[in-house]
View 1: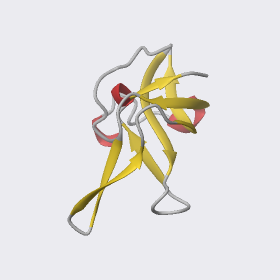
View 2: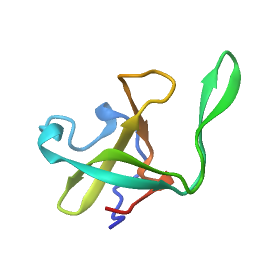
View 3: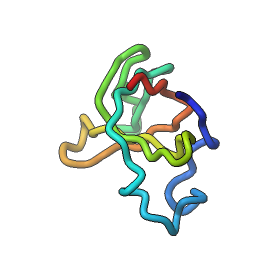
Length: 91
């Protein structure tokens, strides 16, 4: 089910910006197509490995994926938004 709208550009850049995204969120499992990195004190730190499968949520409307988020490993209690092009939705 990877009908992806476009590269994730943040909430303000999304066509659903003024809509209730929470109502469109679905719990999903995602598999990373490529590793994900985060800057940590001026160095890149891998936070998710290619092929890794994690639980997350996706905003999906009319079978189009608008964004994907997963729990942050480096900042507990917050979420990390992942470009939908970098993951495969497997459930």
